[in-house]
Image (cartoon, rainbow, N blue to C red; front, top):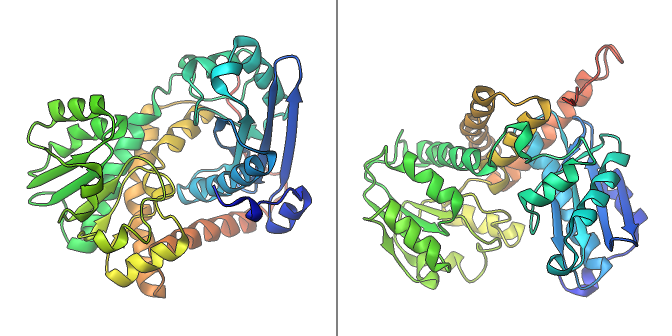
Length: 372
């Protein structure tokens, strides 16, 4: 979070920054209270998860939801999906407020938005919570009856092909043979990625995690991997540093320690500030923008929205490789850091699709919900 003096509760000011709609909602019977931000629907209905967090103030919640909603617009556009970006934050203590009636009430609220918002899991929202929401709304993802399964599977696949793209661009190789990787965080995504890693003759894997169970699980999957303490992972000499845990880990303190050629992983908001992307560029480190390389999860959700077909979802996920190669090309041609190139790619796609939709108005509904 930013300091309190950076927050604003002037909701109308956000419309000047391109946000389409901000909605406050409350159900006094269940204690449900939160904010939905719809950032952009020019590509299609907005899609973004629901975050449940005990914010210190409504100003903090507003700051978080607007930041996250804008990020989803760019993530969805860069992934080539026909959806816009949104986010919802529920304000309160999830340990005290969660119940069937709470989430069914929330589901009814989502249904009232009539398809402008499609939501699903994020921080402190579990599968069971989504199942309750699904009883009241057609616009929730990540439920078993829709058949998409865990988003972890495609997140891992997308992150892996993204690493391959970065290696191809930076090192001129088509595989990970004879390379060294340092994983920061070895949770579900990295553990799922192991089956892809085993297809390569990797020279060395360093890894760290603060969760002892995850450390043990990864060591069992990859016995030759070398565990290091969390603070030591940044300084390990490697070809690829792969952040897969918390955000903001590329910052003033860690950048001087880095001894890698590539940063590519599934974590969100890796750069603490944009200027840290500039610093990586100056240091000659190739950064695979996080919201592009980790888009496998939202791709999974999107295909659930339109009617899940696993081969199509996998094909879209594997296009992360091509998206990153295009971003790297923009970065070189325009002499801009890759994080700026990713934003440029997303913005250009939005503008191109707007121009497409100018012709033959109402010729076809631009998005068809798959509602039973």
